[in-house]
View (tube, rainbow, N blue to C red):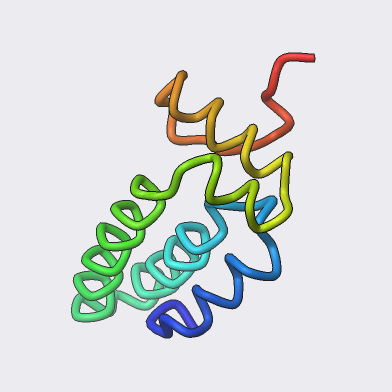
Length: 94
C-alpha cells in the first residue's frame, strides 16, 4: 500500500483531516523493512518517503479545507508555522 499512489489519493480524499497520513503509511512500511533487514525495501521506502514529504509540502491549508476538513487545514497551517514535522491537530492552541 505504501507504494500505491492511488491509495495515497484515496487517503487524502477520504481522510483530509490527517494530511500526514500518507507519510505515516510509508514510515510503517520503512519500519517493517528495517525490522526484516530488507535493505532494498528500506532504500525504496526512504525514496518514497521523500516523495511524499514533497507532496505534503506542496499542499496548502486551503487545499485541505477544500476537501472539507477544517481540522486538517488548521493542522497543516500549524505545521507550516512551527515546522516541527508533526501535523497533529491535538497540538493546536485552544
